[in-house]
Length: 310
Image (tube, rainbow, N blue to C red):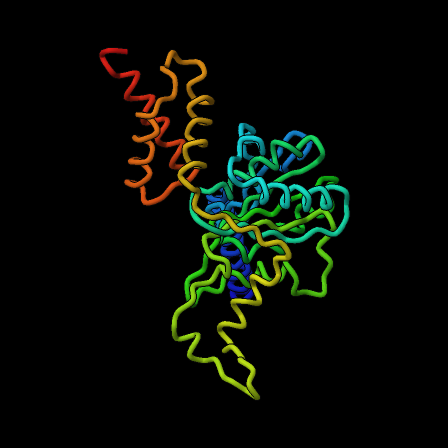
């Protein structure tokens, strides 16, 4: 065997050794990378799961996470919003029967029962196949993917976005517009969008937008920014407005929560003094609402239970 042959075999051996070491290194790195990835999300069992939330893991991958439902809210417990509740339920009846139903926007003053109405729907209709998927504003771009997860399920799904508002310049609502009514794809008759907001048009309205309006042949033509904002709210076929409660309705709600939360406690009967304190509490919170009424009752009960005379 000559020197050239020995040298060639030595080079071949070195190359093979290098490739083996490289493969081993890559395999080690791949295993370490796999260890850092989150475990696959468990598949939702909708027979037992009534509601879920769309979340992102450490790898920024979206998936549905099952929630423990709150079934303590009923339509009967919603006071002062009977008309809104009746319209909401009528639309849901169409949806649950597989008939065309309107995407719904519940908008108005804070603490007046918008979110509670959605929870009441789950309490009332979950045994008829209603399920809820909650989506945060930051994840609205994932709506088509969320729909893909549930469209083939034998249940009726509310895609629920709570407290939805957009500041000028935010464009997360593009995914919402697509699912509502802006694509050639049919998303399925078992999906209905329900949103709550403090704003009817969802997007902030700077004065500069109105300065873009023009008058042509006596008709007002809004600027592009206004048209885009209105086009989003127009995709909701049902608008339900919630207004601040009158003092009478507010006190009725306070009495309701006093009965509900204090039924297992030895508390005195509701009094005029308590009504006066409830109004003072509401003034301090900047408005009357169901949330404020419940907070007052909890505060009042705590003081009563800690009082030396109790």
